[in-house]
Picture 1 (cartoon, chains in turn orange, yellow):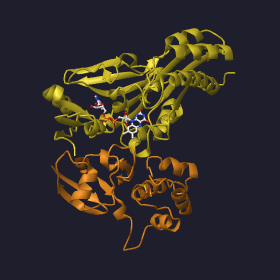
Picture 2 (cartoon, helix red, strand yellow; picture 1 turned 45 degrees about the horizontal axis):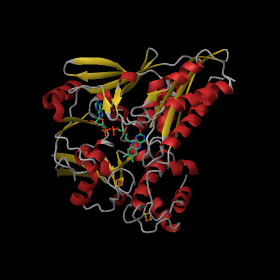
Picture 3 (spheres, helix red, strand yellow; picture 1 turned 30 degrees about the horizontal axis):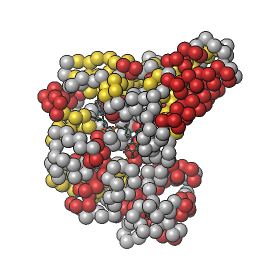
Picture 4 (cartoon, rainbow over the protein chains, first blue to last red; picture 1 turned 180 degrees about the vertical axis):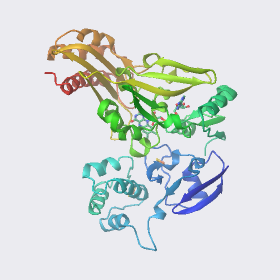
Length: 150
Length: 288
Ligand SMILES: Cc1cc2nc3c(=O)[nH]c(=O)nc-3n(C[C@H](O)[C@H](O)[C@H](O)COP(=O)(O)OP(=O)(O)OC[C@H]3O[C@@H](n4cnc5c(N)ncnc54)[C@H](O)[C@@H]3O)c2cc1C
Ligand code: FES
Ligand code: FES
């Protein structure tokens, strides 16, 4: 099936089979391997992308559903080689261990801050509830996100 | 990847119904996919024709007219959570959305999918049971109303017939003197319920004029605790009456032991949650 979708600000025309997940399409067709596949059943959040600004698990979205939509992945966050404030904050706070969950965490955090620039710690924790970290690093991501509040 | 299927995205109800009629048992309605795509990956579900209903405008609408709330089947859990009118007049629904999965899942999961999946633990069901919701099914032959209490006929089985899909859910505005609340116990922040409970009470001079109690994850389908309700009707709002009703509700459950909990624990949690929910609901309408 032919779809047209905007990924990280660029419009793509793609021909994909309907049984490919959005995660698979973005990884295989566009090489966006910052999308990590952990559970592929909606539990871990490592495949999180923003679909029209809202975080979703791209392992549980069909690629064809992206037709006419806008997608943001971790690769689309930096501008002209400069990291996004959230990315910088994660590095500065040591909020990255193995890094597998990090793209998803940062995108969940971005979606939260876009709507609510000054969230409470509780709101941050709720926004990250769907992002599991197998290195069990939850305190530092929360601190990193708190540091970029407006 | 998933086993191959054909994908349709009808733009109208009519088109969707024709597809359902055409492909009969081989057609599968596809809403948020948070149950369906998981069971296609791990449970061996292999649909031939997927009918994505998310482009049908009527199905994604929340409407409030003539004291009645109408929720399209493809409205997402997050859309419910963000609705002002639901927050003001049907806050038990808002309460259930807040403890439903993760943000990512809530952005995709629909209320219709939650009902049609007919899992014993579906979180949106107990609130709709105590609010006496009416469901509308649609097929190429027309529409049909199904009271929610008649919708669940077994684990993962609904009274929808082949060729039918859920169109919308209608909820009457609760009376002023009704208080309703939803409580859920789960193992972690993001998990299905060990037990969930919804309660609605209507008070008159500190007596129970009407009571509805619903529990999930403790029987083959979401259930009403009718004996416990009968114990309370017409009686005073005392701690003893509430305690007796909570014990009765617990004895009406028939839980199983699974990875989430033992049957014994579910029975005990049922008692505690019903008691707590009754007290919360009474407080909401300013009783005792
Ligand atoms: C990680 C995770 C956490 C979860 N947590 C919760 C939770 O906390 N609480 C909870 O209740 N559930 C939870 N779920 C289950 C699931 O998200 C919900 O049941 C959800 O509401 C299903 O809706 P959907 O739109 O995704 O349904 P889909 O997966 O699209 O469909 C589910 C079933 O219903 C049928 N269907 C859908 N819409 C219609 C319709 N309009 N007419 C006829 N048939 C239809 C489909 O054919 C399919 O059989 C969770 C799932 C995951 C993966
Ligand atoms: S890989 Fe998508 S949620 Fe785990
Ligand atoms: S840093 Fe390793 S999974 Fe989170």
